[in-house]
Image (cartoon, rainbow, N blue to C red; front, side):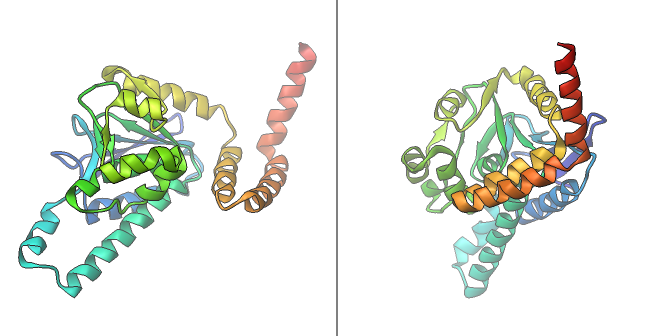
Length: 263
C-alpha cells in the first residue's frame, strides 16, 4: 500500500501527503517511495512548488518505526543487522538529500507532530509552516532513546539555527511547541490549525510569481555557497548568465521596462 498521496493542481503546485496511519512513522518503504516521488517531480517543468503535507490527523511525520528494531533489540544485534541499519541510513540520507536538492521551492505544511524523521523532512524543505496548536511538537528527540538523528538532522539544524541554538535541541532531545519553534526560527510561520492550508496556498501564490529557472538557480547558488564564498560566487556567475539569456528573463525584463515607461 502506498505511503503517500500525490495531488497535482492546475496552478503548478504538487502536494505530497503522507498517509501511513496511525502516526506516519518513518520506514524503509516510506523513504524509498518518497525518493521516487521526489525524483519524478524534480524532473517536471510544469510543477513550480512542492508541498509536503499529511493526511493523518495530528501528525506530520514522526521518527523511525521502532517495531522494526524491537526484535533485533531483544535478541541482540548481529553484524548483518548493523549493515542493514547502515543501508537504511544511506537510503534515508538519499531521500532527504533529494528533497533538499529539488529545483522547485518546497514547503513543509506541518499539521501535527513532526519529531525525529518528520522534523528532518521539514528541515530539508525551504519553508516550514506549522499549525499553531500548543499540543503539537517539533524536534529531534533521538538522544532520549539512545539514538542519533540519521536523516541529516544534525547538520541541517546547525546550518539553520547556528551551533549555539541547535546543540541544546540535539543534545537534550528537546521537542518544541509551535510558538517556541517560531521564536527560534525553526519554522517560518504559524497559522491556526484550520487555516494552515490557506497560509500555505498564499505562500505558493507568492512563489508562483517568480521565474522557475531563476528559483531553481537560487537554490543551487545557496547550496554551493554553503561550501564557501568561492563556490557560491562561481555558481552565481554561471546562474546569472544562464538566467539572463533565458526567454523567461527576456519577457519579464521587457514587460517591467514597458510598465516603467507607462508610469
